[in-house]
Image 1 (spheres, rainbow, N blue to C red):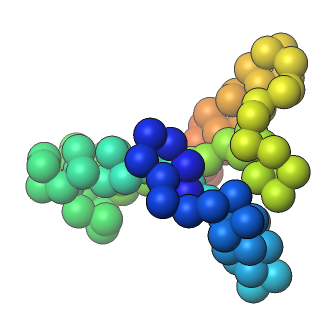
Image 2: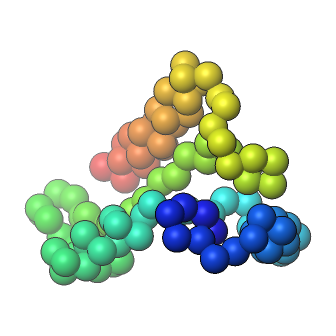
Length: 101
């Protein structure tokens, strides 16, 4: 929708985002494609795989939303707040691991 090669006008981009929002979409994750490609290259599928007799590996992505793209695509949040937001996925992951160990 934006970046070095973008063939959409700002109006088309905003219309798409508004339609997605109206349909219930609240986050667009754009960086996990690289993670998915990495997992595919290593033949790690989106299913449980036994790594050790005591736990199972499930490839996953936990996202942090930094901007409301209906308002802006520029990050204006103070760095200290972003650091706090970036810690939340780790807290979720730790809670999940503790629950399933």
